[in-house]
Image (cartoon, rainbow, N blue to C red):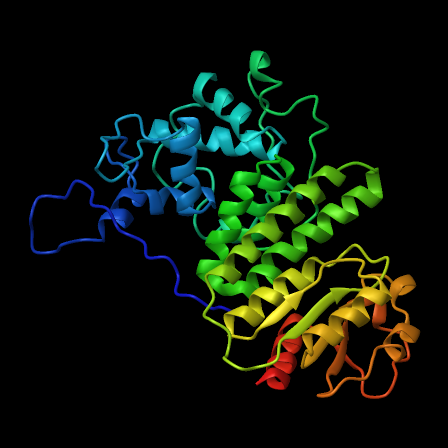
Length: 369
């Protein structure tokens, strides 16, 4: 499952109060509690206020020029009240459906809001405690952008939204990036999530809710299939890259064979399963979607796998006759099925239904080892 230590956060300094008997609160806390526009916030503090990842702020600065105006290369980024206000304008435009590039143009050119709302005091946008609870996609705040920047803020794009009830901050951020078709940001958010919470939670808590919401939106409106394609491509790339970074497989062990049933094109969970197996040092061969029966049998004979995992997303492709037709080999292999298509299918003897990603990883690992 590749749990990894969270990325370290560096706390930058802020102007200190004159020395006294009580040192007072920590620098970032002092800055957050003060409405003095001369005090500036670190990347971590601004990220908490806006409900985004620190890496996202750095990307917006580097790629779109939305960052601290007074930043000196080689020194920590420090954000003024005006800087934070423009970041919030960019975030709101993206929530409404604008691409990051268009949202950045809007944030750079639109008039700043009233100074009170742009201060670094408690009234700023979203506090750290509020950010995880607000569903910024299902019920977004939608300030009306300046008339000459209406297109940049997403007007005319149908104000696309995703329904993500109960989703966490990472899932909401991924949803916004997917709606904006910003593949670079999608990959960045997925990579950061894997580093912070691991492969399994990135799939179960971050990626799956967004994929489900995109699918529901397509079912309800008939639009948005391009979002699913982009998101799936990014998930495949990021989780696939984690395989390359995994430890070497256990020497001498027979591999697991992963494949989609014939006519089944939806095998994204197998990509995630492969990454989790690789993280445990389990050798595998992934043969992709829609594997014909003859090719399946040939691969089993050539690979001599210890375990075969066959995925079916749809009940129409979950055919138990194919399971019974698999070749008998020496040494023998264990057959497993996974995916919602198999849930109500009567399986042949000794064929096991894998009920979750963690279950699949544990069971296949035990067979291989």
